[in-house]
Image (cartoon, rainbow, N blue to C red; front, side, top):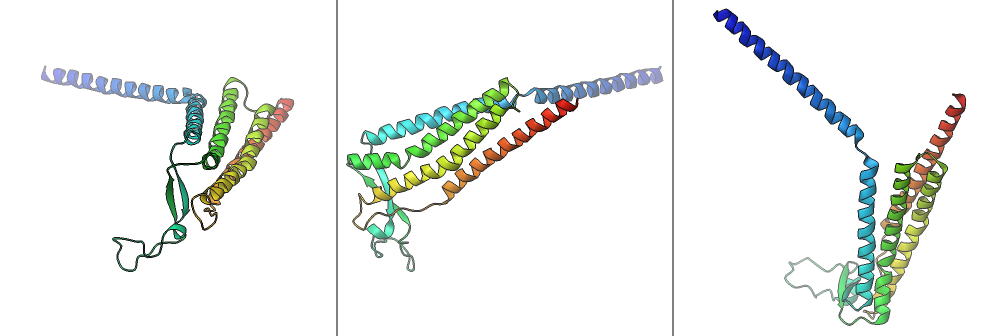
Length: 230
């Protein structure tokens, strides 16, 4: 009787382990199916909408605040406004970098200064918001229709050329505005830091979009050829 009881208990435990194993496999299968059903385009569409709204609101709010007389800072080379011996609490051997930027607060900005300060930031916000709008519309169309179409290729090309041309153009406008703005607070002439990294990033992003458009175009062509064969 003891052996039968032990056998029975062993059988119950073996059955329980099998059931747990089956349930565990079913859970894993359900998780995989859930991941497969995840609509990443929908998630991206929502994120692009949020980013588009934030970029537009921040850009407009920043421009309005600057144009209505909010205090702002202007970057100028430290060598233009500081003497080499102007350091305090510095150890021997430490000196001022004359090429480093220092920010001067404009307490009573003029109309010209407000306009230049707005031009020094608004183009990037405008370009970023436009880019996000185009991407948002592109993803929305890809969710509704077949993404491998001529319309998708055209939208990607338009976005690519916008970044290739608009990025450096926005950077140039902002640089000129900062250049002229520095002349309104110093007597040593206009100066501004030339950062070539920003236009390079826009240029690379634009060519990336053009390359993706070419990939979609070739995929569309290959699919059309396969349809003819079938």
